[in-house]
Length: 548
Image 1 (cartoon, rainbow, N blue to C red):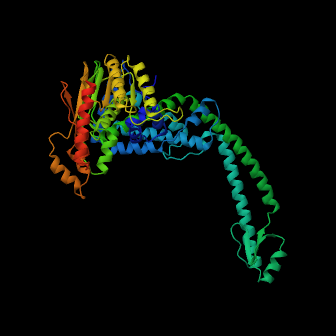
Image 2: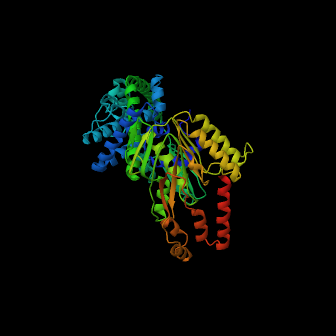
Image 3: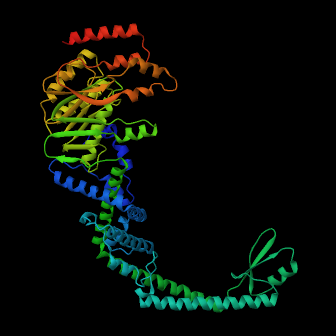
């Protein structure tokens, strides 16, 4: 079973978080892609994982530049999975592939060295280990530089071929130079080192002399010039033939050396794979630590009970957006347990953001991340199910209400398990009377189940049901509406001031008392006429009496 429904990930803002967990290596990217939630029964493993992040966060604060260096080394790591597969298959690696393996082991050595400076007992799954045997294998002359060559030390035969080949090349160059100097003296011309001479077509006498010279041959021409080239003599032809034969022998011997090196690497492939996995794990957990630091997060407390308590929680995406707009984020606390919890309050009161914040913080905690809050305590959930926003299933031809009911039906099916169900504005897609009845019936079912269900609603009375926790957005209580209206009417301030006055915190309602009608208040602030608002209050009172 999926831990969270697919569109639920999008709704709570998981993509925002994943984009900000910035891994540096191909293996870190893979580890991030394969991240899985910690489930019930894995509390101890999650606690250990979070403790590592806690230690790393402290080490990053203390050894900032060491981690900058580690991450710089991460950026150099390439995906060598293809080369590793070829090694395991017994194939001979190419020189570029051998160079990449050498580069990797040099990077591993640098990372291991950096980790040692931290004086940290690195967990086995994160322990990047230097592979000196491979370093010696791919750097037999111990130059210690990030280059690779099929060194003469690998093969006496290869060394002998190269020595003979070099002598041949020297002889060819010497003979060619002697011929070039001879012709320069005889013809009183300057010939380029490559054996070519270019003459203007206007210099007809020189062209005639060059054309009759047996040691020169026509090469090319333009509309202005003619180029001649020194002919290869018989001695050079013989040497060139010998050179080509030696090059073929060098290729054969080089292949044998590459086979030998690849076979030797085969005995170390497990260590290489373990190291790249450790690099990926280390890359990911360091990225998680930086995320926690960047968003001022705390370590969640994991409980084996049946609770979810968030103190001053913040939705990271909303917080970042408000920061860009130079607005203040107002944290929200929420404390729920198994059964049903209703959050009431008018639009613009932050109910949906609170729902998303709850979902993203639970998701973050169970994915092994710190959470943006003052504190958080939770028992692990089997799943998170989210129904937020105006859904429209075009493919099935469903109305908003129909699409919502399909999702809610799925939530009911899962509710016997230990999950977290988040439903925004239940039954918003149908008429109020039927919507109220369906919502009440659904709450009656969900309040007896093992899942934690949090439902936001406009309907008064739903949260008055027995055994349903009622949380009310504080909203605009205690606000001077006359002063606030004048501020809103000021063009330099406008509606943005409403955010500053809105109290997004939740208070628990313990009796069926009348809750504030912030929708009417907000409509008043936005300029709706008093006679319409008076009529709205009258209709609202009649509607509430009918519900009773």
